[in-house]
Image (cartoon, rainbow, N blue to C red; front, side):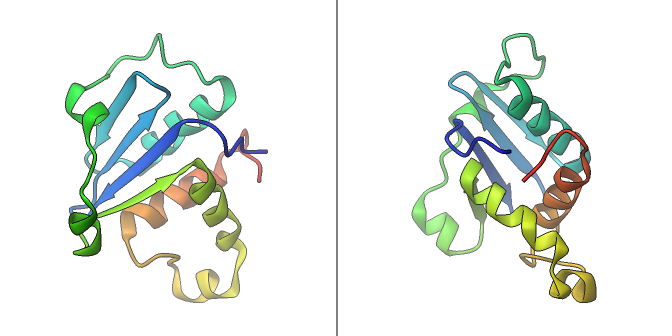
Length: 122
């Protein structure tokens, strides 16, 4: 079961990238590799410990899109609860027919990869 109270933010950009902010001190930008991002997120869900991780980036940790940037379609921002809410959509008829959940391929690829990991349950 995903702990929806974890401090985790996923910031998807309209260029296909993803910034993960995990815990109080970790941020990393994934330009296109949603599989690796999902694996890292799943690892964080498992132990909530990023102290030994490489790739901590100041810019990623400090990214806070403004509301106007989100409204204009520059970013989609999800917390742990939001991501947990997207996972069940993988099993919907719409996803099976259309192949997408949100219409943003990076969000959909991340959620699809996360749902496929055996150590993540809803």
